[in-house]
Length: 254
Image (cartoon, rainbow, N blue to C red; front, side):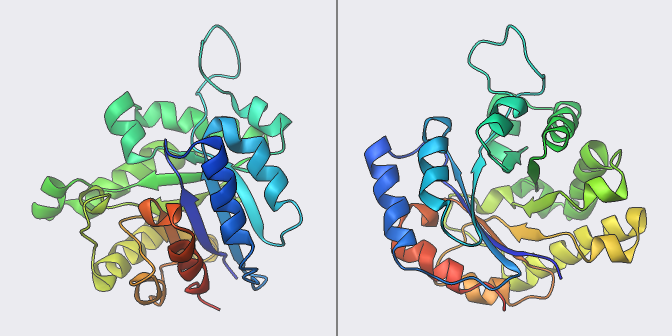
């Protein structure tokens, strides 16, 4: 049974004190998770150790980095390696978020390198894919997303692929208040699963968690997550509000 996941992406927000308070406010609600459910907090680098310490006693709660570099080590001032993340016990890392692709020019080849380094260091990548508004308006979103997946992930073995979480993020619905309808989300998630099925077979495809990442809120999470191929969400703005993110956790399928 594939995991149902509520993943919080705090992005470049919150002071240390505010981050600690937010995490505590969410955890004090003591939302019990089923065996197939997981909550992941992707926090800024300076807060990783604090957040990891905060969730250590919580069953099913984990911490992710928001990025890592595409090289193992070296003269790359300001960058953070997968090995560094592993050394402090981080088990997840967001790779290829649309903001990293757009603002920092991250290529498919670079993302493939990051995925490989994460897997080498026992870190599960949360691999992001998704189309901009002009691609959606042209009706080219299926081929566009398929190309993203093929270019950065199709070199992986079946066993490696099973350690990757996919996050579909329609770029036109990130931070805009727009949201793909639950029908649109299901259509793309089903397409993504079919892409993996064609490459790796149904058994692998049916065990890959695919998260929706476009303006998920407490008010729409249950409807989105109810769709058969939507396995939770990668949540931005709503993850910065404790009451909203708690509602999103509670909306996960059981």
